[in-house]
Length: 92
Image 1 (cartoon, rainbow, N blue to C red):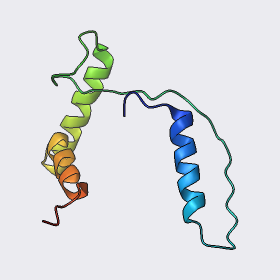
Image 2 (cartoon, rainbow, N blue to C red):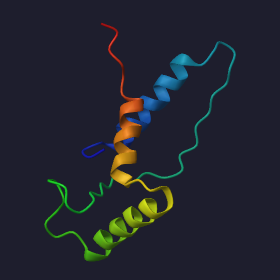
Image 3 (cartoon, rainbow, N blue to C red):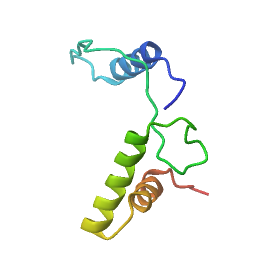
């Protein structure tokens, strides 16, 4: 996700886990690393950067081709299906 602050997100996750830990359970955290988020957009999307690396664009096309050849389905189709399965359902 773009525009996130890793330290703030880490603290929110830490606090949430501690708040939900059962009484008597000890929870500890070990900082592994912290880096700024990096967003990669496949070629051909409205928000694809104009100066996208041709190597990165070729990598995306190679993945699409491999997925299509192996599973006979485009990666973008798989991503939409996964997103629809994970989106919250309305209880109305």
